[in-house]
Length: 596
Image (cartoon, rainbow, N blue to C red; front, side, top):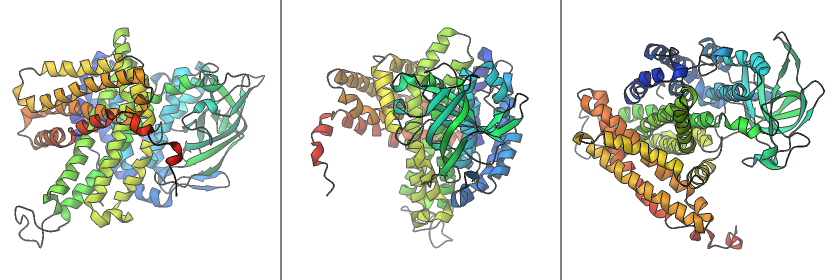
């Protein structure tokens, strides 16, 4: 099994050359003086070392041993606690945090690269800082000054970790039917009672305290999602001087036995009148949660890229070493009994599919990060609104398309190994199992697709979609006269024209049949995603083509060609499937879904 190596060269290419991060950062009022290329490079290098040398070696053991539960206490997998200390002592835990409370205030375009390295090295471990960052985002945006001063510094430093407690046994996507209750107390606190499931790192021994953000309902709350409030509920109560007090009346009832990410503790959390404090306004809990959703859903897409990158590195090393049969054009390794399998067309197809999706996904996740940075750090209200519109549109694509591609890539990486890919010791089957959850949590990919076409495209009458269309058209116009790029621009034009027509077709059909939105949603997101990656590959090719004397840029151009010729055409069949309409989904009577 190949050792994981942080893909720093490609990250530098995406950040510095494709998106010109230094210019972006210096143009945003909230980032001026906070970060530059040299600072970013130092952070990337340090994280790359920790990811490759500390986190990656623990990945397999985390899968095989996992977190363990006994009498309500959870012990992290061997080595995780020490790795956590290394990670937080390096200052990586609070990179994106508010500097007022001890965070570093770094942009998402940079933080996203750090997240990818951590997730690629060890996804189970990476979930811990990821959940803490999400809790910090909501607390920083909506918590009172007192709560922020009391909790954020220790969360940014990693002394305390965070957890998000949303889901209940009977309520997954439909949070409006949660049953957890919060009773107001005379001192301004609340007693929180209920059970939450699927709580990632809800209990563990890596940090001194765990700060839970819990969705619950007040006694007089309205029915449905409009009656949800958000509460901060610490594992240990915090005294006025900042020291830890008594254990709160909450406990971990068990941890789940899962298909993948076994190194992370997925907890059942029981709250028995646990003391908590309101975050934000009463009955506005979902709004508080959605503050961090753009970041978290992009983060899940980045998880997929990271793990798929690890699978790719493993597959390439194996394909260069494993010898089987001769190349179709004749012997290549004439001194050996057979040629390395990397000479075979189908192995090339699998490896290039992985490479194209991983590198295209890295560019796309950074592109979404650009809009997050503009929305957060600009002082121009028009620019902020534009960025927020782009984020609303692109976030479901980043979460769903990138994770769907990640699973396809990991399966291809497993397939490269043949029978050995099915054997645990080679590591490939773990990537398949780990990545599978990324299509499910933080809102299933089906829900992301409904969000894209229903809430973002149709509900805005196409206005949000036109923001993306204009951005792509601006790039195409800027390349007018660049004949060397036409082999990438023309396929992008065709894909965008198809997406324009398809978007209007779905809106027209939905006006007469509400089922058309759901029927088209998954394939529509895929068509959107393939078009978006064509845009990313055209942007990368524009940078690489003038520099093809260098082998790195040669690889970029060759992969861009593979993408537009072998992967992008998938949108044609997906478009035809959408135009098959909703009727075939409902022609079969429910009674005819027989099971025997």
